[in-house]
Each structure stands twice: as C-alpha cells, then as structure tokens.
Image 1 (cartoon, rainbow, N blue to C red):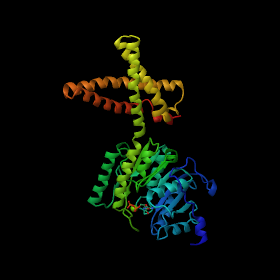
Image 2 (cartoon, protein in one colour):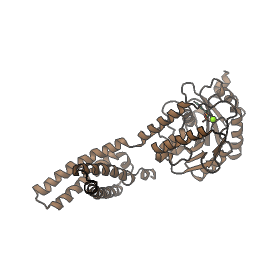
Image 3 (cartoon, rainbow, N blue to C red):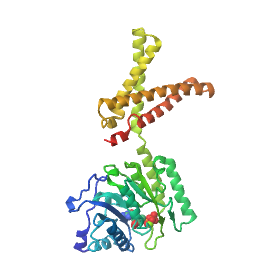
Image 4 (cartoon, rainbow, N blue to C red):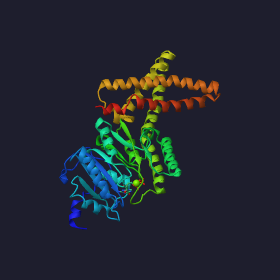
Length: 402
Ligand SMILES: Nc1nc2c(ncn2[C@@H]2O[C@H](COP(=O)(O)OP(=O)(O)O)[C@@H](O)[C@H]2O)c(=O)[nH]1
Ligand SMILES: [Mg+2]
C-alpha cells in the first residue's frame, strides 16, 4: 500500500459505541456538514466506484459540499478500502475508514457515525440493492423534522424484486417474532430489517448502542429518542456484482439482539426498587395504625385512612428519591414534586379500589382461596401501579422538554 493511500484514511474510532453529541472533527481538520452517509463494505470492490459516483452525483445536486460519504471497510481481502481511498481525489466529500481489529456490519455503521461530522446520519448498502434515488426522499423527510426516515419494502411503492417464497416467509417470520418480543419497537416500523435509513444525531447522541449482528435500525429505534418516524417505499433490487454476506448466523444473532434489547428496555432494577419501597410502606402503615388506634385511641376508619396516607407519603418520598431519582432530579421544584405526588396518590387510590374488586371477583366468582386471591391482587396491582407511575408520575418525556 502506498503512503499516499494510508494518509487519506480516516482514523478508526475506538472505545465505547456511543455517538458524540457534537461532531469531533477539529483534530482531523474536518468541517461540520449537514449529512454523513455511511457505506459499510466487505468485499465490494466491484461496486464501490459505482456507488460512490452515483451517490456523489445525487448529493452534489441537492446539498453540495454539505455532505460526506464515509466508506467503512472491514479490511476486505479484495482491498475495497484501497480502491475507495483511490477515489478520494476525484470525490472530495469521500472519506474512508479501514477497520483492522473490529468486524461486523452494525459496529461498522456506528464507527462511521462516530467519525462523522454531520447533523443527520445515514446508512446505505454498497451493493446497489438500495436504490440511490430514494435518498432524496429520505432527506426531505428529515428536513420536514422526522427523527428517523426509513426506506421500507413494506409500504406503498415498496417491495422485493425476485425473492423466493421461502425467503419472503423467513423475512415475515422474523418480523412477527420481533413483534412478539419487542412490540413497542418493532410495531413502529413496517420494515425493521431495513439497512437504509437516516437518523438525527441528536436522537441517538450519548446513547450506549450495543447491537448484536446485522440489524442496526432496531438498535437505533429501540434506544434513540425518536418520536417521528417517516417511511418511504423502495424496491430491494437484486445484487448484480459481489456476494451477500448473510448466512444462518445472522438469524441467530437477530434473535439474540431482540432478547438483549428486551431485557435492557424493561426497567428491571426500577421495578425491584419499587417493590422494596412498596414493602416498606406496609410497615409504616401498620406502625402508624397501631399508634393512632391503640396508643391514641382514634376511631377505626379514621386510623386506617391516616395510616394509609402516611404510608403513601413514605412510598412517594422513597420512590421520588431512589426508584425514580434519576428522573425527578431533572424535574426539580416544589410544584413539580407536588404534581408527581398528587398523581402518585391518585394511582394508589385507583389501585386500592381495583384491589378490592379483584379480591371480590377471585373469591366470589372464581372461588379462589381468599388469601391467594389477596396475593394475586397485590401482584397485579403492583405491576399496574408501577406501569401507571412510569407513564404518569415520573415521565421521562417531561424531562426531555426542558
Ligand atoms: N464493514 C462491513 N460491512 C459489511 C459487513 N457485512 C456486510 N457488509 C456490507 O453491508 C451491506 C449489506 O450486506 P449484504 O451482504 O449485501 O446483505 P444483504 O443485502 O442483506 O444480503 C453491503 O454493503 C456489505 O458490503 C461487515 O461485516 N463489515
Ligand atoms: Mg446486499
């Protein structure tokens, strides 16, 4: 390899897989741009020149000098990286990264985004299976304000060209599996397997991304702050040159990825803390009840109401400080705390009423033992209370707005 080629290569980012909030190009004398498009490659020597030339033509027309193309090559044996860097003099918006230590499509895309100077980050396959014309439609959607613009095979205007029944079936099966394991993410995407999309840097900045395998879009949609998703139909073309790298391994990794996301999206630690706080409330309730009823001689109902309310206050304070401490610390001020407390109180009361209804239903209609009925009701209400409080009292979106 000539020195000239080495000098043209962009340094390969290392360390954590989070995207910086601001482009960090000053060191390499790179200017911020509007758009950075990653082209991941592995043995694409037959396609690299065509794809770079077509994309440059389209982007020169739309946002001249406001974009960059970043080829991220995994040290391909066919020397795609070398061919790509030889194109740089002709295409000044082109950058090339040669990765010698890391492997895999998803991390290639993330490393590319880490090195990128753009506000909007995108990815497209190098093999011309993704029609480049669609790029402009995706770009327009981002300009309108979308956080994520996806080229989809499953909306109007989309499709696959010559897929066999078996491949179509497998692709749909994978999507349905995704819907079962991760409905809140996969349900928002008509084509979760798409490898052709754009995302706003601000939507994924500082989020620890850790994808397994091929499907970087799922990672972005699951971990990003994404409200507006726009989809544009496209027909997945057949490969003309080079070969696909997809094997059975990618299907296994896809399932691993879904399961990993499922565990990290469910707030397990938070839920456990919520349970501990709830448990502590039982003791507060009993203690205060004893004090009011036996020591001070108050009436039964009055003692019960007071002790419950004090337990609710106890639970609220611990939840606000500990269970949801990260969220409440971003929503400071007494008014906001009072609002959270009132919502928490409301949820607790609704829970109490439901609790009584469930016990009655289980005992009188299903004929379950009354202690078992009470236990089932407590478990159900704990889940419901937790969920309602996440949605109402300690909402993450409230912190986003500030
Ligand atoms: N950097 C990098 N690129 C990859 C890797 N695997 C695939 N690619 C590229 O990702 C794009 C899609 O891969 P391809 O094998 O065509 O997937 P398919 O279209 O789903 O069959 C192409 O541009 C490949 O060159 C990889 O491990 N590392
Ligand atoms: Mg392909």
